[in-house]
Image (cartoon, rainbow, N blue to C red; front, side, top):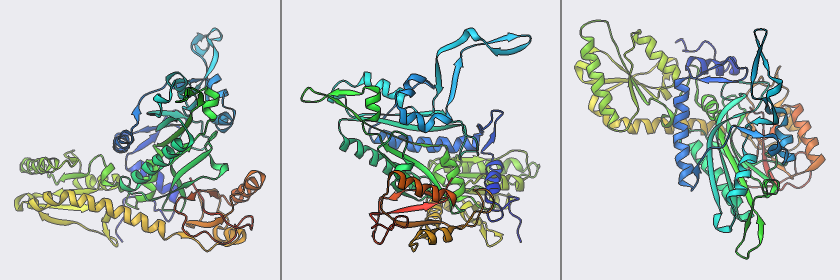
Length: 510
């Protein structure tokens, strides 16, 4: 059997496989600061592509980018009690602005204690709301549509690169509207932007829907999400969009004078995605040889590896590869010729692990025959055999854009088939639900592939909902969302026995 590029497989140990992909693809590493990560150039290149593609979509829907401070006064956070409760255990707090040297050791200077502690940004609703109440005076100022790309800090206890870190990168959109209808339309519009982006750019199929009350963003009236299925059957919340009602407007006094001259509270929204998307891409598309990147987010879509032999004819080979590179760049393709003084086979497998969509290997015969030999990363193997293809140089160049589009579509189709084929719809009661998932083996990352279930739901609230959440928690399950595309709703709620009003997705999740 042909040796795989990674030492651990998805089937043997999915969590360790994930860590191996991040490491061997040279995406990121842990930092000296607990729970934080260093994003390396290849990982940062993926984030830059994600940012560029999504940023354009955000601007195309009428939003403008801006930036707000990293530090938020504690009094701002305290104005919104429900919001504080949701984030209080994760907040990093700054209490002093200076250190001093005592006996050769740096200690907090008691004379530099801040009059008011500052919260390191966990999310920006409160400080942006403070600005909104100054910026908005009249109905003519609405809607106000802004977005910022920033870092946030949430003091996570259990961290994993890209998926859950104490500091991470994201975009957060914040908008203010004259009424509920306009704000809700904005919330749903941005959810659709995320859905389309995930599927067309990340090649990651998702199900868009509304979260139950217990899963809402702190202070929101409604929270919507897109949920993606990873290769271990778990769900990943890939993006959220929140209708905040007038809660933050009340706390921050965000009012406007309507057309009749009356002061009215604004309705606000917020929405965001983060570097967690990179973790989702890894777990959606990666294989036992490493990462597989959709071409739209690959920093280098085609990597050319000249088969150098440390001989004089190497110069001609490099020149041939350089011409091929320039011809491909003319099509707008992101190309790299790897001329590092490393063995060709090592370079090839390095790019396989990094997930470059097309890996070209050019030897002396290719150059002499004016040909191109290449591998598709989405279809690297036929069984255990690594597959390569050879085409005339002119044909390869002309067909390269279509080849990349085909790889993009291939990765999506594979992931879509996995999602569609692993949602169980026959569960009728809680006992069947419990039997379907069973107990996990050890911690919450273990256990065989179970996929998701779609079950009838009666939308219970309050203590009844809390009791259901506790029962699910015992099985390490969560309610993901009620899909917007409901299909047929029938039967009784699997938890209450009451007539179902919708269907919900239940899964183990990251």
